[in-house]
Length: 67
Ligand code: SF4
Image (cartoon, rainbow, N blue to C red; front, side, top):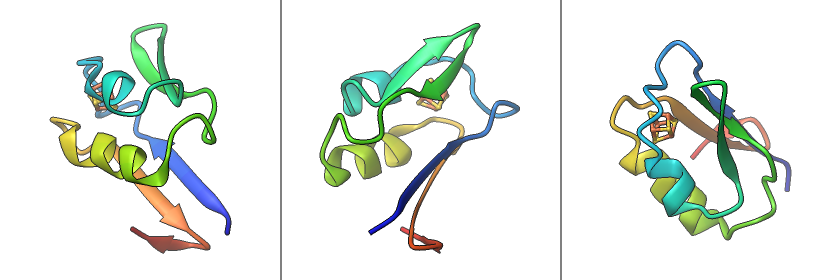
C-alpha cells in the first residue's frame, strides 16, 4: 500500500494536534507541520491526526484514494 500524507501549508496554524496524535510522523518546522516519517505511527493514529486537525489541513491517501 502506498500511503500519502499531505499537509496544506496554507491551512496549518501550528496547533500541534497532529504532532501529539501521531507521534513521530509530524513535526513543526518553520511554523508549519511537516511529515517527517510516515511510518512512525500506525495508520489509525495518522487518521486521528487528520480528524483532529482544527483546520482540516491534513489529507491522507492510500493508493490515490482519500481515506
Ligand atoms: S493539527 Fe493541523 S493545524 Fe495543527 S499543526 Fe497539525 S496540520 Fe497544522
